Length: 82
Image (cartoon, rainbow, N blue to C red):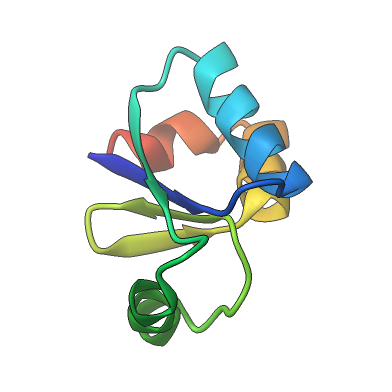
């Protein structure tokens, strides 16, 4: 299951969700705008303090620029289906 941790009014969150949607990838969006505890929890797992954070299971793929790079290299779908 793909999870996208995001915040309101985050342009990179919009871009990440748009990319996943354009590829037909189903994902669960988890809004952390007003949930600092959850943001801190996922930041410990990922090592990132920014959003979006895209997870496949327990593995963090990173943020928008990370999944965009994977997509441009033809590796994103492989990672999402892992």
